[in-house]
Length: 120
Image (cartoon, rainbow, N blue to C red; front, side):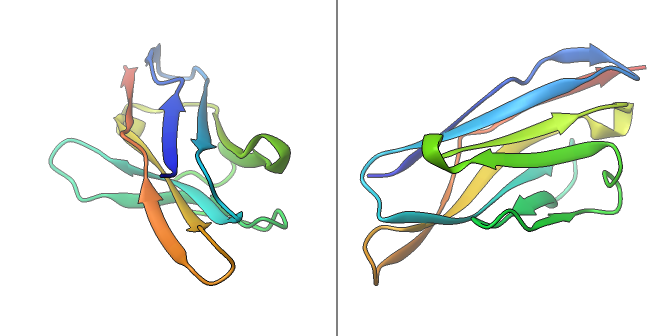
């Protein structure tokens, strides 16, 4: 069974930085797209950023220029560097991955989430 485990969430002041990590473990053939989503208080879960196995990235308008997504394919890990944090970035951040369990079996999995709180 493939699992995603996030880490790095914390309480930080506005203008500060945090780096989130998400490591995939378990038996798998390949990790395809990996990404970060977030859900703020009273809001729906929304896309933050995604990255393909080849390194192509995509960002939500709200974070473009402040956040950077990257991945280490050898470690099955995706990162989210968050700079110039704002109070509106406060949310639970979830890691997501499209996993090829075998060459023909695909699954979409989520991590348990990590809390990011930005104080003003």
